Length: 140
Image 1 (cartoon, rainbow, N blue to C red):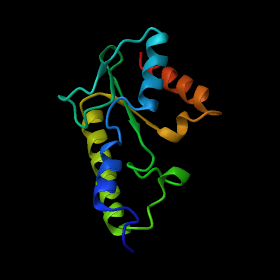
Image 2 (cartoon, rainbow, N blue to C red; image 1 turned 120 degrees about the vertical axis):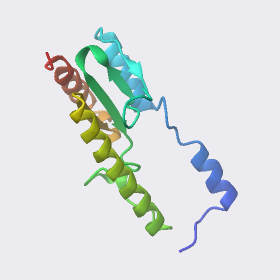
Image 3 (spheres, rainbow, N blue to C red; image 1 turned 90 degrees about the vertical axis):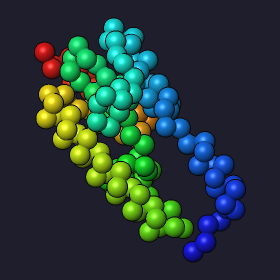
Image 4 (cartoon, rainbow, N blue to C red; image 1 turned 135 degrees about the vertical axis):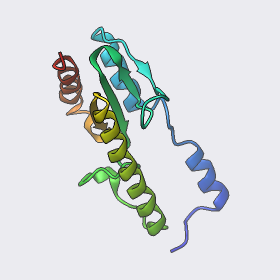
């Protein structure tokens, strides 16, 4: 099935997908900062360039988009009806890379937290944020 958008429109739409400073990332960062935790962002020296790095707690946090990282059994992670093979392959590559980066980080002694965008939706947001904080603080 052909794409419903022209190549130019699709390119424009995709260029506006944020890789950094997304709403879920900002939400987690503001919460952690308000709780007194200090962190670095996108440390290029670490595998996968984690969204949030808390050196004091030896913890990294990845905030994944449900679609891009193939969140299992999530309503926000359904494949498009066009170019399904392309998207399926791309998402599987992302998932493999996520697993490899997590292994490397854990092997280096890092606590790795992964939060999906849907876990920060209204209704479960507070529970998710508290869980992140507890997991970070319980490292010591």
